[in-house]
Length: 340
Ligand code: DAH
Image (cartoon, rainbow, N blue to C red; front, side):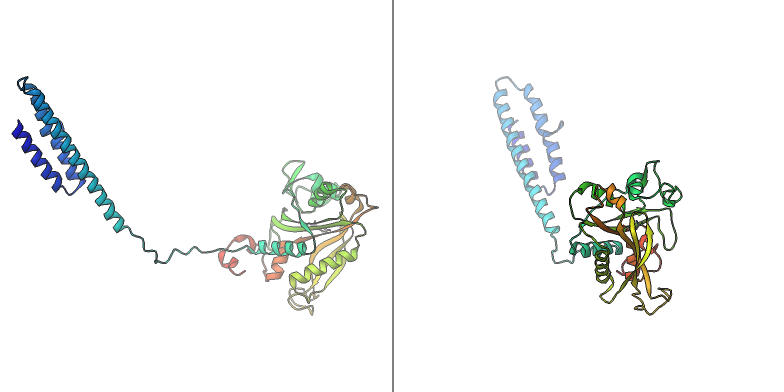
């Protein structure tokens, strides 16, 4: 048995040393220690030896087994290390290769215009306020002095959700919400940009569009203040050579009300196709805050006065960039958007 063991050991050590792969090594293991492996078989035969020889033979077999296990493990580790080194060598990264360029987008023209408007008014000391797009009939109409039979309150013109709630049809409700939250503090000096919704859809109307509301309430606010602020806004937006004119108009929440026209930025005021030969282009609605609206906001019309205005963002964008179809602003055609 001793000779047999020597032979098994010598052959196994040689084969382990010569093994070139994990597969080969696995096979050697099976052949040695597996069910029918050489060492396993040998151990089975220990029982057949005369009792006196068994302990010595057992020790011998165990020692050989331990030695072979150790040699096998060492080789296994060495092969794994070799494989890792080889893989690392193959997988080196060439850090000098050019990276994958990610195309950078940019702001939508409407976002650009909203930011321009915000910056102009922030420069004049206005704060930016916000209100909900799902609004109550009270804030959207009633508190703004719109009578029950006003056409905007018709289901045909506004998107009602229930009898009480609708998608706001204007940013004007933010006037009331802001006054309520600030009352009796003065001045109230805010602009409120945001989305508004109306049942309209053609080349110049979209069911969703954007407005910026303006509100200034303080002691002794006059119409000349309104004119000065709007003239500055228009010149910052459309150029220092622009003029404005005020035309009498009507809004339920202002008295008096004025439509603001800007001298045509396309012909300079001499008259062209875009201003329909008049030299003027209508740009926004405005007026002195109606006493009843001040009261609804919690202010005493005898102690404070104010002006308000509302400007359509799409309209400003179309005039500023010479866009003739409002739908282009919502189609998201990248060829159109890239121009801004
Ligand atoms: N809310 C009006 C609209 O949607 C616009 C407007 C006009 C707002 C005059 C005002 C204003 O604050 O004073 O047509």
